[in-house]
Amino acid sequence: MADADLDVVIRQLARQLHTGLITRAKERRDRFNGLAAKAKGKETSARFKLMAKATMEQATAAARRLQMSADNVADSYARSMRIAASTPVEVKAEKPAKAKPVKKAAKAKTAKAKKAK
Image 1 (spheres, rainbow, N blue to C red):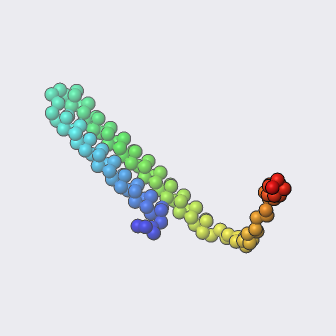
Image 2 (image 1 turned 90 degrees about the horizontal axis):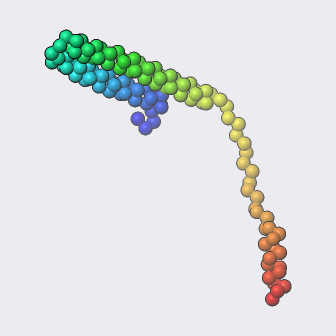
Image 3 (image 1 turned 90 degrees about the vertical axis):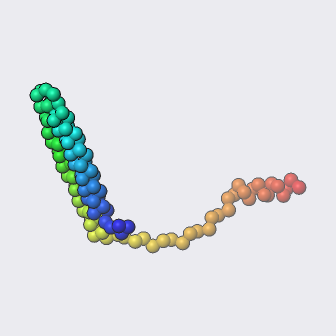
């Protein structure tokens, strides 16, 4: 995976997140359905069943948004890499480095030091 394209990695990570999100939502839905089965009153049971249904609806919507965002990001990255690969690059010739000139102040200090002796 070291030399894999990043758009593939983005999609793969999104799939993992999607799977984890849906798994957790199903666990929570099952918990609410279990509480609904144990409930003593009809109203309480109906409320837990409604919570279970709402949990799955919200989780499914969140997973869909997550997947869409990941697809958009991966597509955008792939498109920008294609554009960057097809754009010609001008190569400038490097100029040789010039030797640094000796500063006048350094020369003046050494001259003053010699005169003082």
